[in-house]
Figure (tube, rainbow, N blue to C red):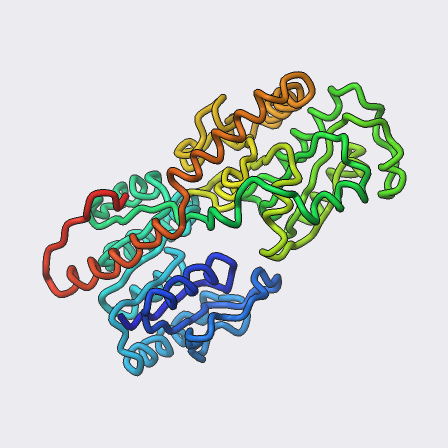
Length: 406
């Protein structure tokens, strides 16, 4: 098929979709709505993907540019004549695609666009309803997305759900590699290490994570934190908690302020943006993965942690409940409750110190869950089926989702 893949920016998720589309034999054109300040993906586009120049994609998206962008998009669609237009997130990219009038349209939810942004205002509710009404097929990453789309009137039979997934060979238990060197450099070989990879944006609750970690660290027997340098951190007594806090974002000032206010300078390592090649080693070097996100579909970083056999503690929201059974692969805590997060971290810490085999068993259960549901190679086939279904629907033909698609 000839596919126009229209997305908001260029992220690791986009790179993975585009790579798999190219490998599946599709003729793919790439269109980005905007270019934001922080680059999230440094790998080039796959060689066979054709990036299309247009009026957008040069800077941040502005609503006042919508008429100009719509005119440019219509021109591109007339020139490329794709067999299917793949567009998402819902309220920006897919909305613009819907306004173009092109069919077949496959709208791809990115999770929070339906689970959170759809309720932001009356205008966003109207945009969401308009976009879904003009979509032939919806692709989402969790059942909560299907249910939310249904609340906006979208037929469940035309919603294709698959949890994206990961490369299970890359994200697997194994030698920590370079991350062991990092722990040694920080003097953390004998510490309990919590890992966070979420962007520093309000939706991901990094402030909740830091407050919860601070509460948990304060209840351990370790002496109060005081040192700032890595060398000073290495001289402390072993056995305490540490936090690998990676990423970045608009809440950087708040993150640094919380670290200072809670005296966490020597217990938190700020690793910045990490390239994809380094991720598996970082998961393997940690003892616990944590996420305090307020909204998620099937979180890719959660799947990566599970794939690496890492126990997890995550917020009790619908997307996470589809992956985590409390006490099996890890723990769930009430959304926003830093005190409950602290108790879960302490529980994991005590297992690490007193019953390491119990914690290792949770890691094995995590890996099994990933093997059962998070295999990207198997799950990606659902997207190709969604393309075919969208084409059939646009042509007025009926289609039936096959067993195993959801």
